[in-house]
Length: 325
Image (cartoon, rainbow, N blue to C red; front, side, top):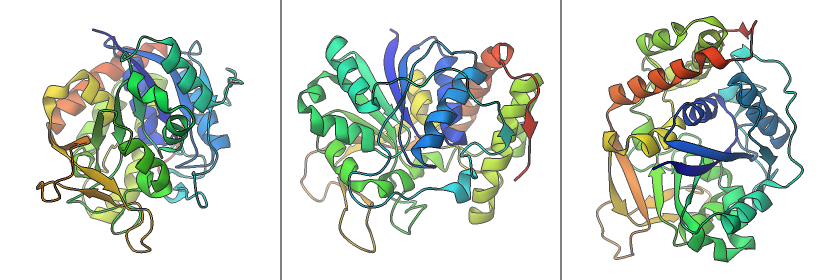
């Protein structure tokens, strides 16, 4: 069965790999890419999404710009991780494919209304602003979503933007609250699993060995992206977060987790954006998410590398510029 998805994203080097993995996988039909402010502001995330699609030779896919700020409060971005463009590490041409006129939130709502109920999976890779806004604007779409598979949150690993909060949830905890209270089936890819998927030198070398412009750009992104987490955690390589969302759709058998109740902290100065995960079932609250904690990381990188090889010949970029951060 081919799974229809919408990728909601704030690229981000790891977002780029998630998009590429989806494009390279016949198990997935990508209906469109919606962008949100997160790793960098919206004017860059929509640009970056179009660059990634052009890089993969998929200018036929529509890209929609969504929310430029969280549902409440100021925007927090992560240029310190992803660089000024969000895709530092490889310099790609300015995109020529158009940005769609429709707002991303409206595209999500219209697509869910048009497609058969239960046939579309939402794949948020960044802050949940677009998804939370769509559910608030048109609550009836919740029953039409097959599932939401997202990257966000953490429990045993704590946070990565504050001691308690993972970046995507921290940027818009109000939107996360809407999503987790929606009744839609949710699969979480938290830091607890993504921190097990690290871009070691050997794994990056395999991707660089894909050759040509494709291998150079992909490895350039990884070289830049991993430098921050290598310094932060003192480990070889950095965690490659977002592609786990797409890998789970393709190979759920390489992941393991537990159904839990997950609530979002929105008020506390110390723990704003924290995902309060009832791993041990002590609260009595009903389960609302599958919290993924385990992964076969070798199988993940085998899958990613094999699928990227399928795209290597389709790249439209002939002379990329790469840079170590």
